[in-house]
Length: 310
Image (cartoon, rainbow, N blue to C red; front, side, top):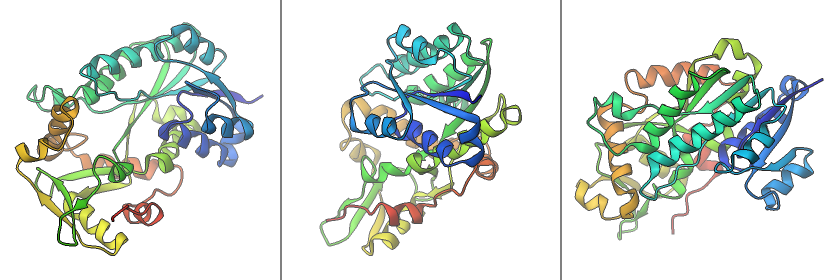
C-alpha cells in the first residue's frame, strides 16, 4: 500500500513543483499517493490537480482544525509558508510555521519536510533587524527540530520568477533596459526556478529520508552575480540590459513602504554575508548535486520564460 504524502499549498510554486516531481518519478509515484491542500479547491489549478487524480482538500494556515484534518493519515508532510509584507512579516512566519508543525504533531505525522531560510539576524551578528521573512522561517525550523517527529529541510534560493515581477528590468529611456539595485554588481545571489525545480530536492528527500534527515538542502541551480544576471537577460532578450547600481536612497524610493526595509536589508545581507552565510557557494554546489533531476539554469529559464521588455 502506498504511503500518503500531504503537500501543503499544492497549487503554489513550491507545492506544485513537488506534485510534478513525484508524479514524474517512476519510483516515487509507486511509493506515495498525494493529497494536496489549497485555500480554494474550486480554483482552476486545484481542479487541474483533481482531474489528474490528486486528492485536494481545503486547509487554511490559521484554521488548526482544517490542518489537522488535511494531515490525518499522512506518512510525510511537505509545508511552506507564504511571506506577507504587511508590517507583521516576522509574526506571520513564526505563527504560520508553528501552526503547520503543531498540526502535524497533533495527528501523529512521523515525517515532515519544511521550507526554511537562513537566520540573517544571527548570521549578521544582530546587525540586520528587518529580516523577518528569513528569520521567522529559521526560527520555525529550530522549533521543528524540538518536536517528536523526524524532519528534513529545504532552503530555496532567490526565485527566478522575480525577474518578471519585483526585480524586472525597466526601460532606461535610450532603448536599453536597467536591471537596478544598490548593491555592488559582483554581489552574488543563488537562483532557483521555483515552480520547475523545488520538487527535485524534495524528491531526493522522499527517496532517501534517512540520508537527509536533520539536514538543510540549499536549493539553487547556481550562484550568479548581479552583473551575470544582467548579461543573461541581454543574451536571452536580444536587447541591452545593463546592471545599474543606484544610491540606496534612490532605490528605496521605488519600493512600497511596507516592503522597503525588508528588501533593502535582504540585498545588504546578500552583499555582506552571502545568502546562506559562510560558504554559500559550497552549500549550493553540494545541494545541487543532491537534486533528483536536472536543474534549470538562468539562461534556460529566461529562454522558456521571456522577459516582457517593451
